Image: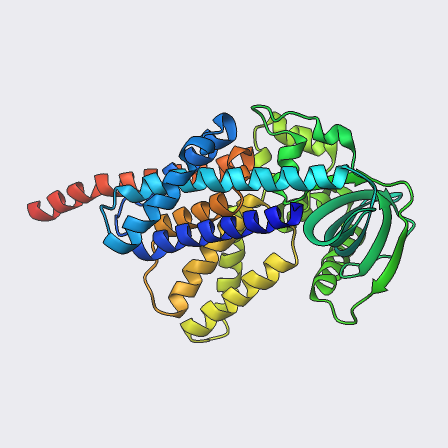
Length: 397
C-alpha cells in the first residue's frame, strides 16, 4: 500500500511540474513574467508555513482546463502557479513523511547504489546511497529513496557500486523534530533530496556489482585528484582559498581565515558566483583571441569549458545560478538567438523553486537570486534614466 501511494504522489508531482513549466515557457505571453515567480514563491511559503493545500488543492487542477482549452485571461496563470506550487510542496512533504515512517518502522535490508563518497576526516566517511530495493520481515518492494550514511573509513566501496546492506534502522529521534521558522536539519535533508541520515559503526554489506565503466566514479576521482594536487603543491591557506573561490570546496577552509573574512564583511568573496564565472570567461576569451577562431567556434569552446568546469568542481546554488545563465547566454549566441538576462534568470529561479521548493527558505538561494535581481533592476533603471538625457543632448546639437 505504501508503495502504491508513493508512486501516485511521484506521478502527480511530475505531472504538475511539467505542466507549470510548459505553461510558463510556451503559453504565458505576458511580459510581466515576474508575477509567475512571485506567485510560485508565495505558494511555497503559504503551504510550508500554514498548510493551505487541503482546502484549495483542487482549484489548481480545475484551472488547467480553461487555460489549455478555452485560453482564458493571462491573469489567471499566476493564480494557477500559486495553487499548483502549494500542491507540489504538499505532495513532497507527504512523500518524505511516508518514506521516513516506513524506513524507521523496523530494521531492513536494502539493495543500494553508491552515489557519492566524501571523506570527512581520516577516520570518518560520508556516503550517499540510492535505495533501489527494500526488504523487511513483511515487505520486499522497489523503492526510490536516498540515504546519507556516516561511517568509518574501513570499507573499499567506490562510487557506482551496487551493494546489499543488512540490518539498517533509521534514528527515530530524527523523526520527532518539528519544522521551525528557520531551516532545520530535516529541511536541509529535504533540500538535498535525502530521505534521512544514519550513523553506522560497522556497515554490514555485500558487493553485488562494480561497473567497469562509471562516469560518476570517473568524475569524482578526477575531482579528488585535482584537490589532492592543489593541496600538495600550494601552502595550506592558499590551497584552501583556491579550492573555495575557484572550485567551490569549502571543507579545507581555515577557521581563522574564515573569521577574518567575516570580520571585514567580505565573506561573500569565498562563495563562487557570477563574478568568478565572469573572470573565468574573460580569461578564456583573452586566450581564444590569439587562436584566430571564428566567433561561433569560440562560443562553442566556451560552452564546452563551462560544462567540464562544472563537472570537476563542487557546486552550490549561487554557482548553479551563474553557470546556468552563462550557459544559456552562450548557447543563444551559438544558435544566433537574442537572449534576455531577466527572463533567463526568472526561468532558472522558477525551475529550481518548482523542482526543489524547500530551497526558497535557505539563505544562499535568497541572497543569490535576490541580489542578482536587485542588480538587474538597478542596471535597467539607471539605463532608462540616461536615455532622455542622451536624446536631449543630441537635439541641442
